[in-house]
Length: 187
Image (cartoon, rainbow, N blue to C red; front, side):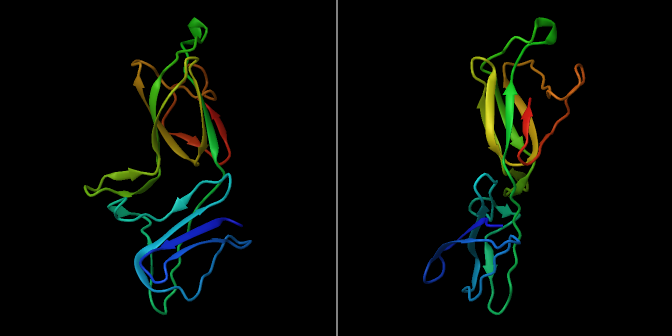
């Protein structure tokens, strides 16, 4: 309930650029909306929550959720999913045998599993892909992450392995690592 729904359409006259709040059931109903083909840009969020939105073909060749179309005398229904944001607290260290000394300045890419569509060659376009680097003490806290299954790719230094804190010692960590809504995960 009370999620912000921002709707923009610059292909109609007058131009639409408005924000509404969903009702207690998380729904919003608009009537008398001018017809328009794939030009209603819609985004949904709430403070402390993730963002879900439509995408234009200029952003993603084949979006899973394209900008909305409205047709005369028809109902257009669209669903969005948002939830509380989570955190990954990442620490890069040496082995247990060495007393877990910090390893600083580790560069890695974090990629979510959710896709927003495919590119012109049919390859997936991921909703979240970002490069990071731990600080000198081997730590980084990544906040405001959407619930998802995440993959890590360690870019440098080479030879490091991924271990989730909750994993038993000596057990390999399998990817992806799931982050639940509002969860703080230590890695």
